[in-house]
Amino acid sequence: MIETLLQGLIDNLNYWTITILMAIESSFIPFPSEVVIPPAAWKAAQGNELNIFLVILFATIGACIGALINYFLALWLGRPIVYRFADSKFGRMCLLNQEKVVHAEEYFEKNGVVSTLVGRLIPAVRQLISIPAGLARMPLGTFLLYTAIGAGVWNSILALIGYLLAQVPGMQEKDLIPTVKEYSHIIGGCIALVVIVALVVLFFRKKRKSHRQKFS
Image 1 (tube, one colour):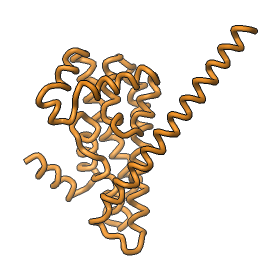
Image 2 (tube, one colour):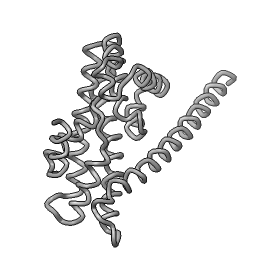
Image 3 (cartoon, one colour):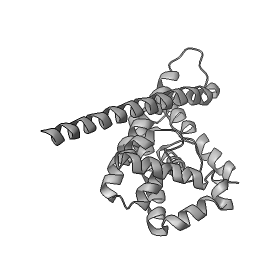
């Protein structure tokens, strides 16, 4: 029944359904953004009622709503209940487990509040990064700002891929999602690599600055 409902929303993409689906995608319920934004961008490229910039805007609003659900659940329930839920039958149905939550927490602790922004761009971390932010009681304004920026960047990437693929001669809509998934995984990997390099550079710069101050 749920799959039928979701498929109905996908088949009738508009700004409201984009917002709803992206809110689901950004919460703890497993649902890929690749099946929402690129098809919406495809429709925009075809001139079918949608505007590419509004697609990105409403997708980002939806992502923020879903992230807020995770944030407040973690904030209100606390770590023991969150971990218990992750290992529950329903949690496993949502593809959650304690290991994934621990990984998200370690990523957050290692990279600080910036991880809320960067984490939105990294596969396997994107949906869960809001949980450690809530557990750490990250200021809501900062959380929303970083989440909106990170989600906006990712949504723009997916929208651009869908929009450009619509211009490719011979490309059919049925081939869109498999192609987007292939490209998004490559892009996600590249982003993760860039982030790792940037964090390493920042770490050594900070360490060198601290060393200079120590001996100055």
